Amino acid sequence: MTKDFLLDKSDPKYREHRDHLLATLTFANDPLIVTIKKKTEKRSVPANRYYWGVLLAYIADETGINENDLHYYFKEAFIPFVRFGDDFNVSTADMTVKEFWEYVRLIRDFASEILHIDIPDEYSVAR
Image 1: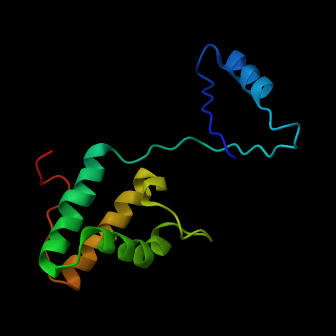
Image 2: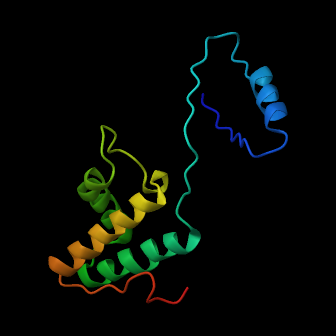
């Protein structure tokens, strides 16, 4: 079982929240592994809408391949170029904003150069 907690040092009650968190972490007295990582922003709802409703939809319309199959194909094809390391079985929802837009750029380039499909960029479509 894992639990995620956000501790923000700028919060005036930071120490109180930290102490409460540590006091309430109980797993039947089992040893714990605590991982601390920087909070990163996830992609926005409009970015998600662009990915599914424009990028994948354009390619699906032109190729006849459904969006979900395209999504899994592109994940396998392009995540290794975006997310360096050992874990390529990552969800696109886990990508940072920068990683996500790099991933989108790779798909748009592929669509343009290989499939000859011109897809409007995220700034050209109505939000």
